[in-house]
Amino acid sequence: MTHFTQRFLLVCLFLLLGAPAHAGLQIDISKGGLQPLPIAIPQFLDQPGGASGGRIADVVAADLERSGLFQILERKGFLQDPASLWQQGPNFKDWRVVGAEAVVSGSVTDTGTEVTADFFLYDVYKGTPVGKGQRFSAPKKDWHMVAHRIADEIYARLTGESGYFSSRIVFVAQRGDKKWLSIMDQDGLNRVDMTEGRSLVLTPRFSPNGDNLFFLSYVSGEPRIYKWELYTGKKSLVDDYPGLNSAPSWSPDGSRMAMTLNKDGNPEIYVKDLASGQLSRLTHNAGIDTSPSWSPDGRRIVFNSDRGGTPQIYTMNADGSSQTRITFEGNYNAAPSWSPRGDLIAYVKGGGGVFGIAIINPQGNQGRNLTSSWMDESPAWAPNGRVIAFTREIQGKGSRLYTIDLTGYNERAVPMDPDINASDPSWSPLLK
Amino acid sequence: MMTKRFHFLAVTLLTLGLLSACGSVPEAGPDGGQAGAASGRTGDDGRALGRADGSAGALDGRTAGMADGKMNGEPEHRIYFALNSDEISSTSAAVLTHNARWLGKRNVTVEGHCDERGTREYNLALGQKRADAVKQFLISQGVEPSRIRTVSYGKERPLVNGHGEAAWSKNRRADLVP
Image (cartoon, rainbow over all chains, first blue to last red; front, top):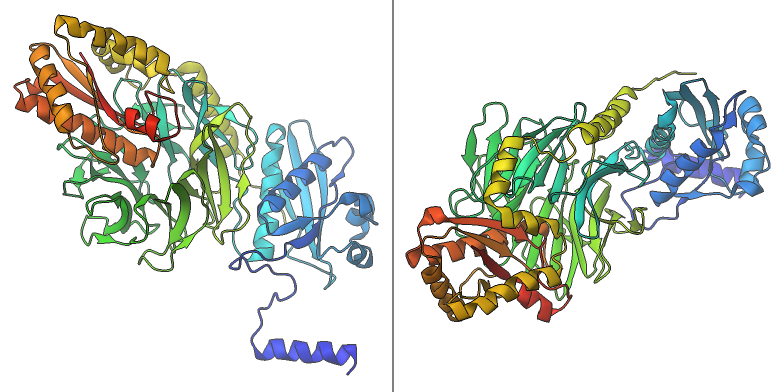
């Protein structure tokens, strides 16, 4: 049988099996531990006056590499230069030779105040573009975001799911005896410190639209929940009940807050309507109920309770009905977080001297351990529900933020100044 | 080429918002009056807040004074708890009974603390339960409820900076701050 007929038969087979239309270049991200896709990302061509082509391509490459789904090819072996690539299109043979399955061609224009990047993505083996060319612009100082948007676009075209690179992470930074709120791009760059560390702050949480934060502060001497409007810088006290006010969690439509209050003499979960201020109590038992997290449709809440003797994960309806335990393995399951896709719950699973991040479906089935260490905690989902950021405390050496793919592969430390301890991450939605 | 210009305004505003927030109201808190009143009321607590990782030296300095105070009939103002528990042991009950007598008409803040194991929010709740258990015990011994304030620091304020049971058993505690 000739090579050609073999190929022909394979194509027929695919057609019979109903292969996807885009069968050429597609990464199946539902499987973990796959060979990463080799992709060539040459410097973007600088148009006259421009100087950002190199650094934008570098950030695109770094984003894709960190996802674990792409192998970024060394530029020095490339046979076609960026100018020729941009002006004539890819010489596909040259890219096959270096082992690329995909190649990105880009061009950058810097005007006085803006940076604009155009890019094309090609399937090297089919010799065709993947999607159309696309342009992104931003104020010059936000050139990183142009790169993140391009990386999101490439990720989406090659995986079929939305990316997560144009997003930020808010977290608690610590140096010495000070803890403060800090915010950064998801890749750890462009960190901005938000508070100065004069009072203890904990557990910042992005609002669903990314415009606001809830966080816990002891500025008054008591643990209280505050709201921070990021556009205006305005901060306000959300509630002021006696005792503990903690674990704020925004409903997906932004209208309600679930939280833990002690005002009735025991830590219980309440939901507050933010417009009317109306408060309803959802849990009633002698144990601890805390760490509520909403399902993306706003109908269910997952939470942590030790009513059965040890901390375990439970779900309930948003009105408090149908409280159901969903974890039975391990003697310390806590800090649940409902995935933005709705299909999974991430939580901290402890036992035997280790604490790791685990996932389980909302019915309590198909649990899997993703990480294990001396102390992993505070799982927070990326906006596309494929990646989880968490805090890893290294015994005696402080804490760092890490990310893990929900397949359990590709555990990475988030780059951070070495003298800063980081904890309590919350991941923003995709910035539009 | 398809042109899609996307909204960087949001990002810019976000950054500006943050920066201006830092510049104008860095830490003042949303309600200066309330914060001021509270810190006036809990002056000792204010100092405690400065010690984010619970410098053992500073805390020991404070409690050493209290322990010494026993000569004047002042009890030790600290009790310890078992793992994940808010139960008051018989030893602790004796310490608290002594505290209740000594407090008389004084106001007291009960701080609940946990060891470094476990999640932040669970430990905040557990610290509160420990403080509340102490409060209920003091009330049972005749201390007026209105004189007792409780606050949980969860695992944020260890007494001892160690990473084994020896340290953890000292950090699972409630401190009474008269």
